[in-house]
Amino acid sequence: MELPQNLDSKFRFILVAARRARQLQAGAKPLLQSPSKRPTRVAQQEVGAGLVPIEFVGLAAIEKGPKKKLAK
Image (cartoon, rainbow, N blue to C red; front, top):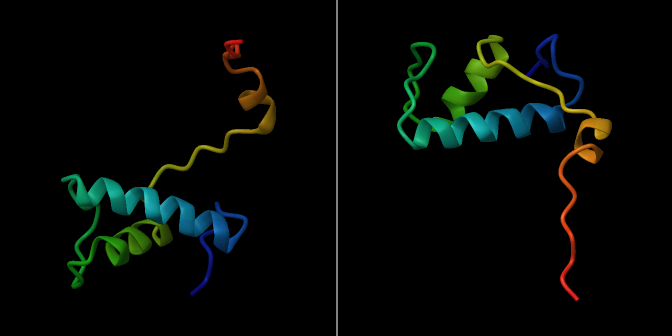
């Protein structure tokens, strides 16, 4: 399987497809017609076709998030 142009690694492809498969299992409508009924396979096909929007969050955005105070 070839990686879509907008993904940089197989690991990221699997993460995006897994998240989309969870959405499909929860009742989301498929974005394409597929002979497969398995959510994981449909999600992989959607990601491969570039139909799933992907947002990259950098480490700086995570570090700027709300800080939680630890209770003593």
